[in-house]
Amino acid sequence: MYDFSGKIAVITGAAKGLGAAMAQRFLEDGAQGVAMLDLTQDALTATAARLDPTGTRTQTVICNVADYQSVEAALRKYTRGLDALIFLSIMPVSPGIASRPR
Image 1 (cartoon, rainbow, N blue to C red):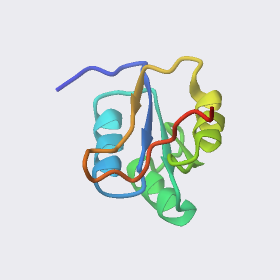
Image 2: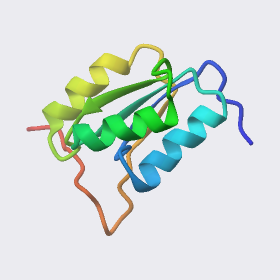
Image 3: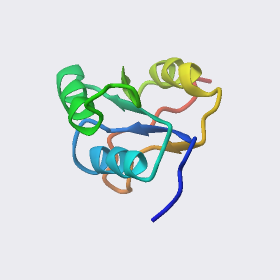
């Protein structure tokens, strides 16, 4: 449907549900890579292995989007060449969004 050839996406909540579906879609539509962020390493690793059996187009990162420093550290790894950032927080049901400390 879309052409994401050569693009890199970072998706939060990527271990399951909508996040996993979005990661799959980016990969199917030709994304060069998908950084998959979530809280649970085991679920994240299993989803990444299912979506990218060769392990060449996904990267798993433990990240809590309710914690600004966790988000900042995760994004710092992927800002070079970043083409899409998907935060899965649909209001009013939100898993938490980090705000910059004042």
